[in-house]
Length: 279
Image (cartoon, rainbow, N blue to C red):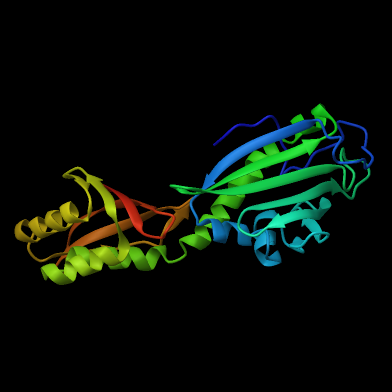
């Protein structure tokens, strides 16, 4: 998940460990927290969560908002009613945002404007790498924020990945349609529409790499299990770009097999990996 020196509590905001700080020039913040995560979503979509108040609120809390321009207001309303505020200092679309951060409550350890958050976004083979730096005047306050940023960025990664892969159920149904297709050219067209060309498929009877290999594997199954059709048997259970579903195999009206599949999606929204578990 990356490195960390410390962090802010997203689900449980900081208490009163240190005396309230007063706003000071932000070039005098010698203590920093650093954390990096990879989000299974394209960089442009990840950035929208810093440029759209509805998306911003989706990972902070209802009523949170952001004005995505230099000087724009940042408002964070935590689910437990703690309020934090700041001001956007710098914003580069799809690349970086810098804003100040502090609490309305004078009993909290950071006054409004007394710390700085910098978030940078970089392309990664698994989606987007987010690099966070939160700068503080006091090392004890910095250390108190570690659990919060760990939690909040995890929520952020999941919310963003869920939007990136909102069509998961539809794509999985198309994937099963390819498995059920006996016409070779039509099956290949269906597979190429939803699967990454380097797709991995593994279960008790297969260790498959690539669309070509998977296509041939399905063709062989039609020879040896003639008339069996696969169906999705549950709603998707989705987290961090991965999806779990139950399936059944029908032969006529009879259920001939059942199991669970684990799907992992690529940042581009294609099926990149499937693990099958037979019941």
